[in-house]
Image 1 (cartoon, rainbow, N blue to C red):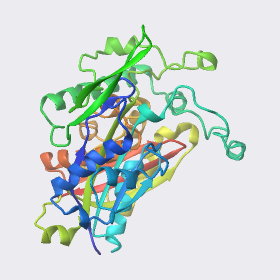
Image 2 (image 1 turned 180 degrees about the vertical axis):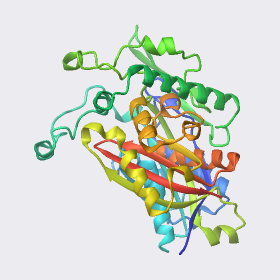
Image 3 (image 1 turned 90 degrees about the horizontal axis):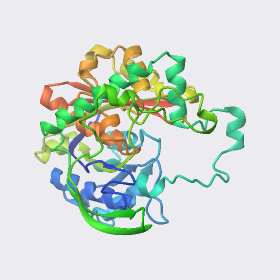
Image 4 (image 1 turned 120 degrees about the vertical axis):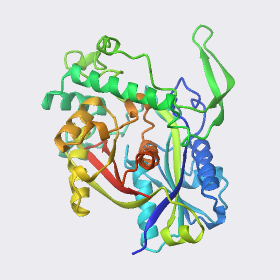
Amino acid sequence: MREAVIVSTARTGLAKSFRGGFNDTEAPAMGGHVVRAAVERAGVDPSEVDDCIFGAAAQQGTQSYNIGRLSGIAGGLPDSVAGMAIERQCSSGLMAIATAAKSIMCDEYDIAVAGGVESISLVQTKHKNAYRNVSQAVNAADATAYMPMLETAEVVSKRYSISREAQDIYALQSQQRTAAAQNAGLFDAEIVPMNTTMAMFNKETRETSYQGAVVDRDDCNRPATTLESLAALEPVFKDGQWVKEGQFVTAGNSSQLSDGASACVMMEAKLAAHKGLAPLGIYRGVAVAGCQSDEMGIGPVFAVPKLLQRHGLSVGDIDLWELNEAFACQVIYSRDQLGIDNAKLNVNGGSISIGHPFGMSGARMVGHALLEGKRRGAKYVVVTMCIGGGMGAAGLFEVA
């Protein structure tokens, strides 16, 4: 059977949503930036690319709403290159990579660009139009199907007795690991700096001005974080009906809203060898699974065993794990239920510290896992995450 290999990866730095360097940058612009960089890094002719597949939890960028095609156009791919959008919430970037890989393996593509992008700043608003955003048919079948993910984290915390202290301790670990990785330059090979125009809102005059900025690093993490500062934060659910319910989830032990994009170039293994390209890794497979919608955070507990069983592997065979840090509680529960060694898990921090542009994170995690796996001499890496609505996804890659 044909094999799909990843020959390059490129991403933006992650900028704080609404307040960071990408707060006025359109999703196709970010997507195009990393498409262009990944193709240049791979050294392939853009006309050789068959498809550009991008994941996004909420697409943004004109009326065509195909973020794959739009990112390809913005990234300088010729008209001959098709594009497609993938949406499976927080796993969208991972699913884009898996979709491209399977088409390569089935002899439908030879070369593809795959990745993820999210502009939370330009899509998510504080005052959503609720008209017909909720299906009554779905609610009749599952009253928790539309439960906000923050609330599902409270459910997981209580249902599985994950204490506030344990969550804060894990969050501190994420911050410390990211700070150490940044100081050691471990993200530098992934990030392609991007010039932007940043919107600056003056609260006193109520006017918005614009200034140039460069996003060349992840700016969400807080290296000065302490356990005491985390413990001092109030739970997110402190208003209205949640005033008595919120006990565990804070801004410090949950993922940060951020904007960014990530892409990789994938191709058939023999073609890569013919071109003299050294792959970063080989796609081996993906698994998805469903779970109760009110505890969507534990999705990896169901997806990972399916993935490993199909490939005849055990948890101990995996050298490096990237488990998306949507919330500390779900990472702790998934880690402990699956028996993952904490020393192999999110070794350079995760979304609690780095940030979480929903549809982009899976693609970022794949690229980072392969680069870090190569540094550590790893063989197998797994990228896994929970997914809004009650799902989990897990992808297996072999480090080349």
